[in-house]
Image (cartoon, rainbow, N blue to C red; front, side):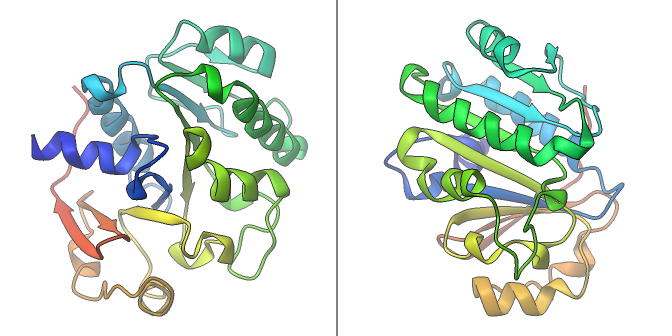
Length: 229
C-alpha cells in the first residue's frame, strides 16, 4: 500500500491534488534513469488509480525500454493514445526537437478534457530544450505545461542531467524530484531553491540507489536499486 501511495505521488495526474505538479528526474548519464522510469511506470500501470491514464514518453535519442508502440508524428500518436496506455514518441529531426515538443504539449492540452485518467508526459533529455538552465526562459508551451498542466490533468515529467540546471520556472512548480547519481554542485542549489539538505543523501546515490524528494513535505524517501523483470 505504501508503494502504491508513493507511485501516485510521483506520477498520478490528479487535477485537485497538491502532489500533482511536475516531477523532475535528475541523474548523470548512465545512472539508470530510463530503467528506473520504466520500472516506475510499469508499477503505476498495475495500480487501479492509473487505469485510464495515458503515458507519453518522448525520446530524442529514439531509445525506450517500454513495451509500447513507437510513433514519429503527432497524428499517429493521438490515434495510438486512444487505445494504448503507453506510447513512445520519437522526434524525427534533432534540429526541430523544441518545436516538436512544443507542438506535442499543445496537442495534449487540446485532448486533455477527453482523457479521463489524465496524461503523464515524460520528456527525456529535457536539458537540451531552449532556455533549459537556471537562468533561461523556456518556451511558452513548456511554461504552460509546468504551470497549467495540473489543472488540465497533464503531469509533466522532466528528465535531465543536473538538478541545478532546472529553469527558474520550476521553482515552486515541482512537487517532487527523483534522484539518482548526482553532482556535489547540486547541493547548494537544492538547499537554496528547494529548502532541502541533500548532503547526507549524496553518498548514498551510488550503485543505482535512488531517492524521491517530496518537495511539498520536504521528506526524502530512499530506495534500493531496481531491476526490470
